[in-house]
Image 1 (cartoon, rainbow, N blue to C red):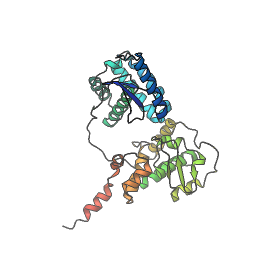
Image 2 (cartoon, rainbow, N blue to C red; image 1 turned 90 degrees about the vertical axis):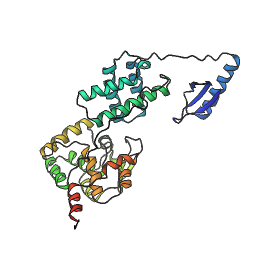
Image 3 (cartoon, rainbow, N blue to C red; image 1 turned 120 degrees about the horizontal axis):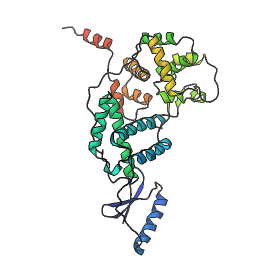
Image 4 (cartoon, one colour; image 1 turned 180 degrees about the vertical axis):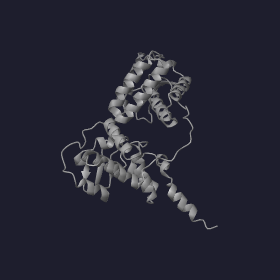
Length: 324
């Protein structure tokens, strides 16, 4: 009998070869106490090791996982996980036992997503969420192995992130006009590169003289963004209040900003393109990608590499320097 800790921080006991039991704790002291108790049971011959076949249905599993997500993952992450798992349930069937789910079911899922015109980037995001959910099932001993472990994401041609030019930024300000709430929302987007939920959750107390602190982030890591001169000028127009700045749902922000984009003549743009705008304009200003990674709150440098591009005007300028 062997006590060990996995990379997820949870303690386990290898009862016999290839038979592992979770102690359901990350606390070292508590794990050792439970291990001693199991050793005593083993000595007394009372330790029964069952080769249990999971009988949880996909519907039950989705419910349990989403309840866990509510307390352990960011709001947007929970929403994406729920969407992916609901679609998987439509494809596989809610009563199917998770023990009977095979890698082929992911092929069926991808085929379904493709049939309803989901983009490869969307499908890949959902594949990652489903794989994470089934890894969680293994950790909780609902499954012995993850049927989707090693499932490869779709290959596709990367496109340059879409971003607004400085003239288009002014066009959006003009479209917003006297709406002070959305003038500030738009300014926060293009001056901080924050995500939608981060801006929706910002409080007046998060705005400091030397920067803005985003506490509720996707990665659960707070970050501080220095305040630009332009944003300071806009913030000076507002009286500071108490508590949350915007009492607006994220979906409402997207809906209203979409109307302003149309009014500005850029109706094909999406709210997330403002985050791309922040990063892309920094790249054009010569800011290095490592700095941009920190400002955007990316945990992986590879994510920031999508901004390693130049605008079409800069590409033309580079070509024009060729003298032969």
